[in-house]
Amino acid sequence: MVLFRRLLGDVLRDARMQRGMTLREVSADARVSLGYISEIERGQKEASSELLASLCAALDMPLSDVLREVSDLVAIEEAAAELTRIPVATPAGRQVVNSAA
Image (cartoon, rainbow, N blue to C red; front, side, top):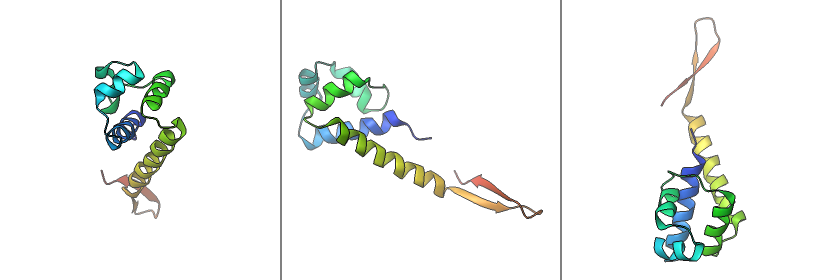
């Protein structure tokens, strides 16, 4: 199952690191606790739309860019999950899909 919050956290962490910012800097700029941002980056907490807007502003990154990157990652994970579905023929000639996972 694809977890949006985990992928969002990955995108936010990558953006922060690409900008050379620490959690402390983002925390101060976004006016959000450092611990909470850390939990969001690790996919342990959901970010509200208001919090996400604050984080995007602190990272100087448009919300649409963040959501586009997350959407791309979701599509990749969905495609990978679909590849693990293996069709198996039954004696009656019907196909059943088994998961390789």
